[in-house]
Length: 100
View (cartoon, rainbow, N blue to C red):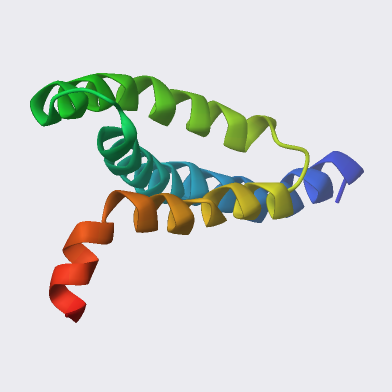
């Protein structure tokens, strides 16, 4: 087998991981970012949700492009990990209703 065939075969798991992280991680990140932004914008609630929702399309696109441009999968996982603090900010009132 040639060297290029070996290299291309070993690249597929990394490509599949980046694709899954771009699609699923990007969706989760964008969802959390939109909720946090809608909560933090100093506008009427309807206007804040509308502005955050419109911006979400750009955020999702930039996140997907960044996943494939990042130097390593570890950086991508750290980026996906930012979903949790954003989700905590965006969904804090609902979480407090459930907990107490």
